[in-house]
Image (cartoon, rainbow, N blue to C red; front, side):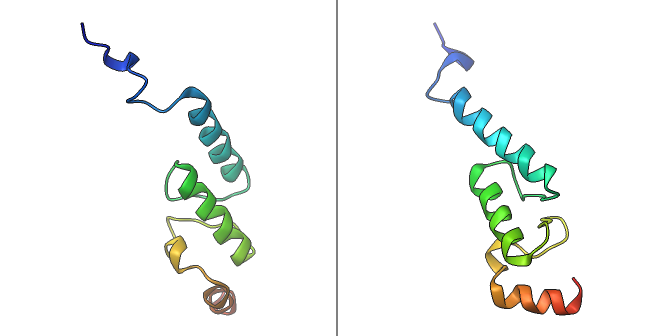
Length: 80
């Protein structure tokens, strides 16, 4: 007999899934567009938003790994 989707080793626990979903919803409510729905991507987008002083948008902005205080100063001077 095959456990299929019921095999808990293959899927994320519901509690962790809901935590990520809630974090994603909160980020979107703040105008932040993470590059994905994983907790890592959400946290990176929130951190980039804090550095930029405005909501991060992965569709229009550089990847979060390139968002630093120095690059944020340049982007803000350019009005980007």
